[in-house]
Amino acid sequence: MISFNDKVRTRLEKTMNSMRFDELPRKHQELLGAAAEAMETAYSPYSGFCVGTALRCQDGTIVTASNVENAAYGSTICAERMALGRANARGKRRFAAVAVIARGRDFPTREVTSPCGACRQMLFEAAQLSEVDLEIVMATTNQDKIVVATIGELLPLGFGPDDLGVDIGRYR
Image 1 (cartoon, rainbow, N blue to C red):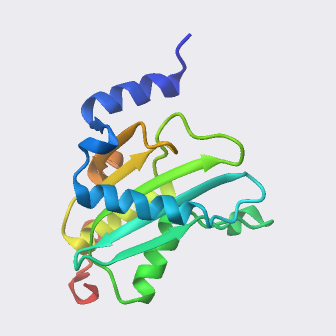
Image 2 (cartoon, rainbow, N blue to C red):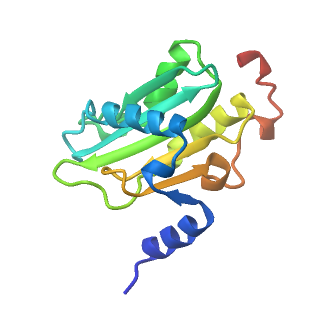
Image 3 (tube, rainbow, N blue to C red):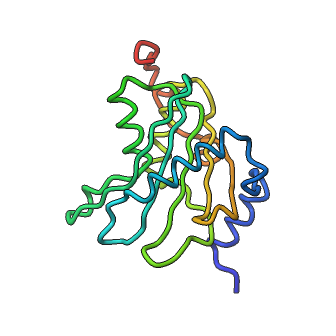
């Protein structure tokens, strides 16, 4: 029997760009490599699930991060939000793309890892600040399966500053 998750993944992969590593543009290969390096710095003693992220800023800078877990689980922070925070601390708020890759403690992923709901929301706002539909490159641990989507595809009908009538132009 095919699970609900498998049905959804199959449908999404048909509508998004699923490809091999050698089919990726060089800029996405580089970004994915940086995310894979960051994945190895994850602090995940509880879940054993290591995630690495790399953000490409519009000026070409790459900012990386990994997930950091905490015994008070709600204090855990995902790699994507950590990367956005690191970029913000460096004065970077305009992005072109993000790569996400993960592995289990004792196993490689068989399906691509996509940003969780909270990370999608943060990436959606970053996209509005960047004035682009941010590209997201998601890969399995071995990079044998890669899906490229936009934040608009991952979070359709997203809610952000534009919906609140907030002029975020001064924060760019």
